[in-house]
Length: 252
Image (cartoon, rainbow, N blue to C red; front, side, top):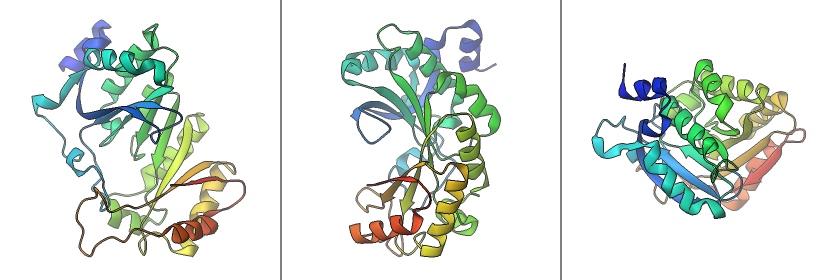
């Protein structure tokens, strides 16, 4: 049995460790309100537009290893100014024991119990992982890189079938806060494709919250040919093509 699972078995969740790339004390772009964000190391996608490529490798170095007990004092110091915490990545769901332990510890702490706990994910977790996290999770944000399976694979190196399934599953569980679409000019912004995307999202929830994010070159990994950031006008046009039913679109 691993140390992580051994700690869980004895109920000492504060001792459970995960591979943490970084934390942000205050963020207003990683879920509702002001949030403490934990970025976990390791991702199963290889996205062409990744802004955190350093978090992709699955880390085994001890310098990444962080316990729940290490994080709790940092969260407590910021707690008066927070609405909640978000675990992101990398890919948060690759370390479900750590996420579960962190959320459990936050909710058991009298100073932190009011904070809501969100997961920011690429949506590839299996049903068992989502069901394990559900009792301690208040909401999820799922990235849908592209509704077209071939383009999605070109963008990420992986199928979008698990992502679409997670969106449906999490909505049914009442845990889907929003779907996020990163818009790459000339890659995933075809009007007909966006229309199909909107129709599918609306079939899951006609009033789904959808955040459309314009790709920004600053901080992104190099790519040849260079990826083109869409203009604000292009993002508005993409939103017009996506808009179906009562989808709640937010452009950033």
